[in-house]
Length: 100
Image (cartoon, rainbow, N blue to C red; front, side, top):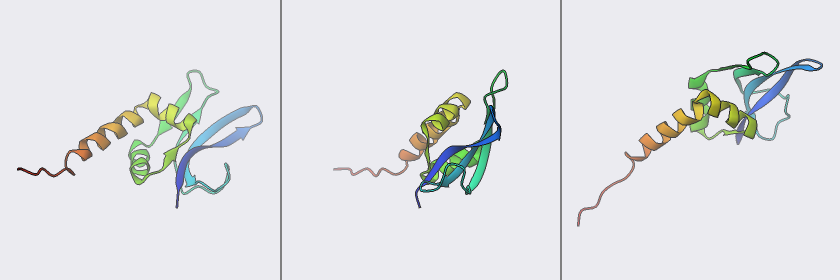
């Protein structure tokens, strides 16, 4: 099953806030999520973001693809940098050396 990390719109008319959810890529924008991993409130000043970093990193490692907006939010929160570091540190152990 292909999974995506996307934003689910909540809130009243002209007063939105978004939940960051992991869902099936074929599902609707506001359909049933697999898991909620945070929220984003653009109406507050400054914008309020709360992300469960451990769950976000778990889903990124499992292959979930973040939408462009979620990727931008993750980048500002430092989640993408942690994911890149974890990905790079894991690559070193998989290689095998052949001495000739």
